[in-house]
Image (cartoon, rainbow, N blue to C red; front, side, top):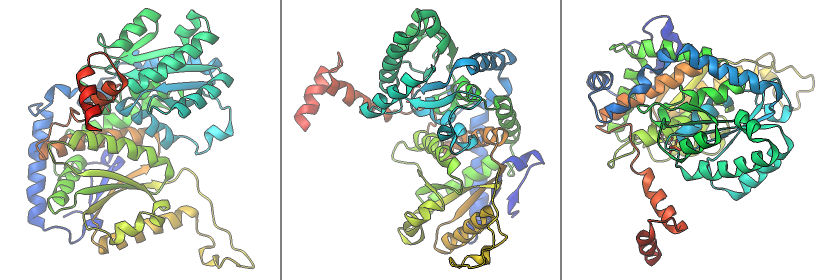
Length: 455
Ligand code: PA5
């Protein structure tokens, strides 16, 4: 078996490396799982599986229109002139994609460096913390502010509460016309309270297509508008995703999405029930959050599914590293490995060598990071934690777009291998019903009485 799988030169954007899986399975098992993954690939691309009406994301990258790109850029350029702060309001799939890309592509300390060429982006509506929202108003008070409010259903409580507050603050500071310039809504074409509010208030609105679910919506205005107003190159991101769409649509055992889906299900069949997504660059922390939501909400159903977790190395080698090395043997790791950093520093020689680090003289910090990555992979592999390595050449818009599409496609295949509908989330409703009942929402009185009798 080839250790590093490439269909073509384009394939190099995302590679799947199997070196860290040595001895984890027999060739015949791999063959079996690749065949099953190919069958699930057919189910996905022929749109004949469960939830097949939510496959609009399959062709999204190649179908984004020029007029939509122009509108995104128009808003970005308009806001660039006088807006200092953009609050993106949303939860789950309505914020994690843009947050992930923004963190991956921004300067680590951009918020501390202060005013740049483009507005700063902060997020709201992803929690119900009174402290968070109160402190957000302190920030809004000091900045020229705009808001992007995102909710496919238009009825989700967390963003609705946050936006009610932000809308009031903006309404106290700006005229109605100015609020119309400063607020964009992204929601369903006709349903939900947000759609009605946007129409009544005259906000510019983008539609989330019916056939694209929240966690598959990063390549719609849901993900692209926040990135455009932050000054990111969304065209490059779309191009990267389009290149990956071309690769993923090939029914080939060199298709990295087929290989990845096959491997994770093979490992799951061996009792590896937890997959940890690993990074060695803190900029990828929120990419892991996006990935966890994608796989957790898509696969965790009907008593099945790999539990998606994440760690940030080397930080977490000093906390979770112990468990991973020697705890229950139910884990495998998927490492996102970035070939080249944007910037690096050489460790200089020191005459006194008081810290004993002169053996590192002349090496860069990233060379040390790479050796930590290699050493950890070998240690974990030897400790019974198989490693899949997903490689990308660098952190940029093109590659992040490709990575988004790759994981979405692999998730679709993988869930079908488990005979799960990847595109619904029935379990998310349970907490909402209880919360509404406990908060006294009309229509939930009976449930409220039952819950109060239980506690
Ligand atoms: O992936 C999903 O469908 C969910 O995580 C939703 O994105 C999340 O619940 C937010 O829903 P909405 O956009 O309707 O407010």
